[in-house]
Image (cartoon, rainbow, N blue to C red; front, side, top):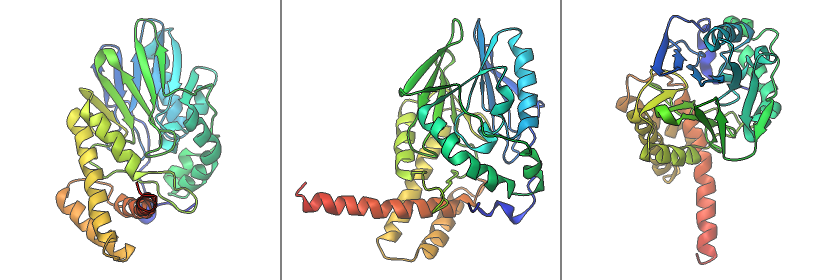
Length: 316
């Protein structure tokens, strides 16, 4: 599996640090990523009887840091673990929680872990020595409970946390985590702060990401937003974070498709659309994901055009 051009430079050590732990609501904290690549924002949500951990960090050592913090935070309460999606920095520490927590995911994410996990483990080990070291002795864990419904309410004792299977978008098994009583939403990599959307478009190995479904999901989330949004990476924000991602994906689609209509080469489309996006958001990081985003939407344009032509032929 070919990785994006993250290997152009040695990545910093993706270590989860407890130097930026923020309490954003009652019995709800976030271990911030401190803008370190391949470190996610990690959440802990408590109720009377249990604490839910959201994402693990990449590798055993990071997950051990998170588990130790969670155990001390829980003070005897039961532990649950969930992951926003199967990618290594979010889920490839779950094995450390095996004897300490019940691991809950949606069914599609469980399938991603089983079917995609080994390939992503190999790919990420190729991102440099620091990342490879973090992934030593990692085994891709299986969830203890994989729910088949769209929504799974997890009762922590006096507090319900709502796990929502988001459907195909960034991955096949994206999961939103809502804390309704605090109006907090954990998005995983469906939303980032200060960064272009991460499109894991690696044909022929992985083409599960869908820009169109992702846009539709963000339109829905932005129309009825949570007041506090914890992105997969970057600073915690509010409704504007969801709107920013929606607007970016919409513009990425529109700028790509209008050039695809002109029969322009994909390479030229990437160059032109990337220039437009960077001019609009020069402060955003993650420019390497512009090319994969354009490539994904070029592919979806072909399917969209084929479906439109088929509907026209059928007289719809």
